[in-house]
Image 1 (tube, rainbow, N blue to C red):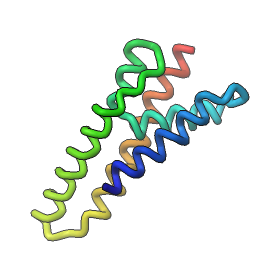
Image 2 (image 1 turned 30 degrees about the vertical axis):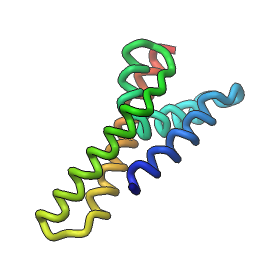
Image 3 (image 1 turned 180 degrees about the vertical axis):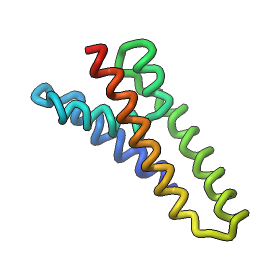
Length: 107
């Protein structure tokens, strides 16, 4: 549930920044990074089709599956799930940053 909650927070902050007309440059990059980090499936659709797409059912399904896999991974290794969860969130933000650069190039 941590992953889904963080994904929703990232989506809300990202959408707020991206839809703000005074948000340019680093603010826009931050907005797309947070948005695409929270909504990884929507990010692919947005980059491929060139529009701001929010396919939240697919994104939430993605995060639930990732959370399940991380829980199984941590349980099989006898570890706490917080470490892998933080790594997954860091990777999501890096993913969002990379895809936001594609959007910046296209704009």
